[in-house]
Image (cartoon, rainbow, N blue to C red; front, side):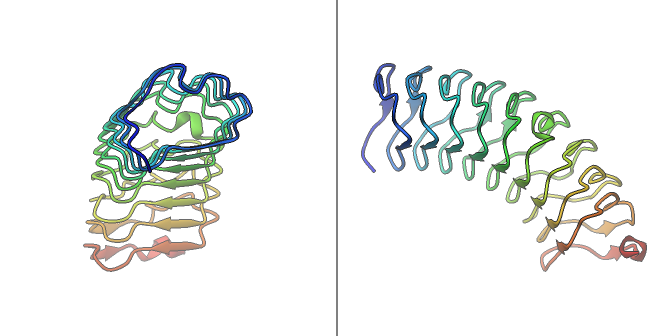
Length: 231
């Protein structure tokens, strides 16, 4: 909660024992590449409520032991390919409320340990079916509500066999294609409330063998449901 506007290379030099770093509520607009290079012991990094507008490849170089990265409430518009390269142990990534419009195909490349990903409250209009490929064997919680998606590309959730919680609420989706969730065999909670979905077929939820809770509440335009989906 200061007025720091920039982190230059060398600013954090020598802090090899630092475990947590809180830089929330500053005025950060940019971070030099490799500024975190010496923070080899860092586990948690908080950069919430700043003015960061991009994350360059190499920004987090040196943080090989980082477990949690929080970047919510910034102004990041695009997630570049390799943006989180080197964060081999990252388990928690929070990108809530940034105004993100696009995510490049290999933005999450190398994040094979990621369990929690929050992309809610952004302006994402489309997601390529390669977006989450690197996360397929690890992620358990994926939050996508409050975006601008109007459809989900078939294969978007390909091989996400450990996913347990998926949120897609608040007027982001106009249709659910058949078999779009077919690989989500561990999914337990699906929240698709307040959308513009008008019809749901029996194949829309095909493959959801572990599903315990589904929310389709007021605000939806749903008027047709194939009763066989519940058999």
